Structures are given as structure tokens and as C-alpha cells.
Length: 489
Image (cartoon, rainbow, N blue to C red; front, side, top):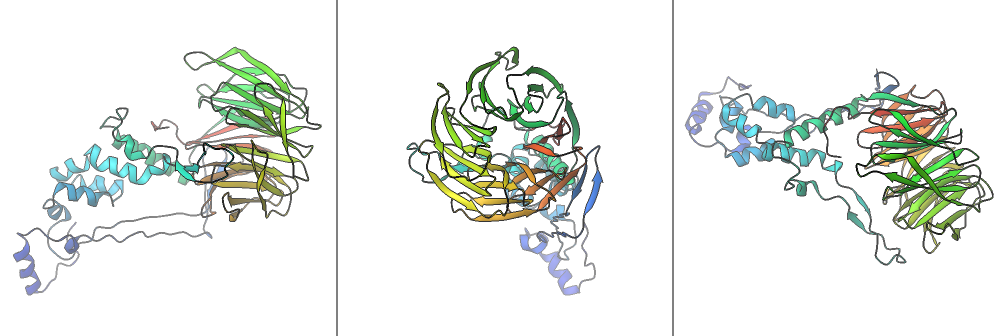
């Protein structure tokens, strides 16, 4: 990189030559232009990747520029005069492409740029720390206190640096793979696979041990799918109606299904020592009876309680072991369509357009969130934010502590049927047959997928690498953004 100003006065030239033997001040030759961000909501780029199609509402470009001040010579000439530790600190302000180019200028910079535990570890922590850290409500030891605190439930990434599970040669590869993953999300580039086998609408899906998916259908069956080979490895029918909801316990040893027949079945999940499901021993343990209409959603609280929501407008809390009803959470004036638990807190969403926050052990309603204009179909709760969507076609994001609506996400044309969240991102599925990815902080729609399902979308799951959806077209769709990438999961 030669000087942009080669015609200088003789006085400035002599000044430059006289100071060339001294270590130059950083401000004399290094300047960062900062972030140049282009963000136009009026410009849409459409690209088709296999099927479905995806649109990205905006493009973002961030640049950092090294500027010369008129002193003859190259940037690398001056960088070589700085201590290596200072160069490393400078490099963390650059992107990976710029570092790669600097590494080709001289041997010393090549060594510094390829210092895996120095430069690349620092860059990885800086750019991808959000893949590891999240906050949640503190689960107080005294559960009757409704005091909300935030805590980090995943160790900070810096603590991983000392872990023996990460070799010093891995940071560059980790950065590269996460960079590729991020670019794929930005561009909507995913491998698309379908799971077929249900003979009617697929209403619900849950993940099991990352390798499996469990699905429930209008065909009355519960199926288990192996994501390693995309095959159905087990299928059981113990309901007399549609399987509308599923939930797997946090210990991965049991699950609950709810049905339009008004009952819930508690299942035992038998696994071998290798973690493989024993398909011959997917056993129903007990059945919960009491609702006077279909069970629309279910959640599990601290592996102790089963909470069910029904078309009969009640929310009921059951003892996991005895299958006895313990209490009812009363207050909704319409069918309760969605439930989500976090610790001992339970969020419910109803056809009465209200969202309520409960304490499962006391049965107390802590807050009511009012803002939707029509009935609700879905809700999610991550400990800090509550997401709710329904017939008014918008997704609202609520602050669980203050009760205030922090964002209204608009973009669907019909009922918002399902929502899931991961970090600061949320995904929705709608009766308009689209799946949308959102930034839940800014409210911006990041991606919109069309054509993935031939009819209504009933359920979606979101992870760092995948969007999984189920629909009325009898199929489960997997959008995999992390194919062939070695990532920390």
C-alpha cells in the first residue's frame, strides 16, 4: 500500500526522512474509518437456494480501512516497527480478510497473523461470543419469591480458552467456520431436507438430544426421526385424536404428548449407553385425564410438574409421578392455545388475546400482557423476553420483568401460528405459508422463506444452525445452515 500523497513539499519530505529512524506514532499512519453501514429497507435482494426461496430485506457492509498519511513506504514497514503485542491489539479491529492480506506482506506479520491463540482466539471471542452467552431469570432457591435477576447460564467464552477440549490450533478453524455460518445466515444459504412419513398434518415437533426429532400428527401418531440419516426410527399411536403438542423433559428421559382427545400421555424415552433410542421401548407410562376439551399445549416445569393448556380455557398443573391434578391456573376467558415454561414461571397465551405470566407452584398470576387485538396462537419465553403471535398477524416482544412491549414485528399476511427463539433471533411460521427470521431487538425481518411448505406452517424450531418446521402438507422441513461445519455446539 503506497502513499496516496506522493507530491509533498520539500520540508515535509525532509521531516519524514528525519523521523524514519524513529518508531512512528500510531496516529501518524493508522486510521480506522469506522463502520460504514448500508441499510435500506426499500431494497430487497431475492435469491433462490434449492427450495424454498429466501429474501433478505437489507444488506449490511462494514469496512475498516488502513490509511497512510503521506509518509513513503508501506503499512507493513511501519507495523514491523511496533511490538508484536501492540500489533495483535490493532489486528482485532480488522476483519479476517484484511488480516489475511497483511499476513502475505512479510514474514513477521505472517507469524503474528497466524498466532492461533493470540489473534484468532481474540477475534473469535470478540465476534462470536454471542454464540455462547445468554441471560435468563435467576432461579431463586426460594421459589415463592418472584424476584427477577439475570445471570449468565453459559460460561463466558474466555473461560473456554483454558479448556483442554480446545487445542491451540483450533481457534482459526473455529473462527473460519463460524464466519461461514454467519454469512450463510445473512444470505439465506441453507441445505434443505424433508422428512416424510406422516399421513396427515404435522402439528408439533421437538428436538431430542440434537440427533433426533419427535413429531406429532393429525394421523394420531408420534414419530421419532434420526437426523443423521433422515429416517423414521419409531412410530407409536396411543391417542384417539390428533397429537397437538409435545414436550421433552430436560433430563431427556421422558416426554409428554397432548391430544384433541382431551388427554396427555407421559412417555418413557429409553436410550442405550451410546445415546441411541431403543425403538422397541418407547413406553407410555401414564395418562392425564381431566380436561373437558382438547389439550392444545403442554410444558414441563423443573422435571416435577406437567402443565397443560386446553380448549376448555383452563391451565392445569399435574404431578409428574402420580399423574394427579394439583391446581388450576384460572384467568383466561378463551381457549388457551400456547404454554412455555422457564424455571418455575409459565407463560400462557389465549384466544382472549391476553398473555399471562404465572408461578407454577403457587398458581399466582404475576402479570397480564395486553396489546394484541385478536386471539393468540403461540408464545415463547426465554427468561427475559416473551414472544406472542396470533390472528392480528404481528409478533409482539414483551419485557417479562416490566410488562412493556419492546417490539412489534410486522410482515406476515395471515395468522402467526408458531414462534421460537434463540438468543436475539426469533423465527415465526404463519398461515401465509412463509417462515420469517427476525432480530428481536431491532424488530427487523432478516430472512423470509417462501415455498418451503405447500400449506399452513404449524410449528417451527430455531437453533444456531437450523430452522426446522412442520406443516399441513404432512412434511417436516429442515433448513440447515451449518452443513459440513465443525462448530462448538
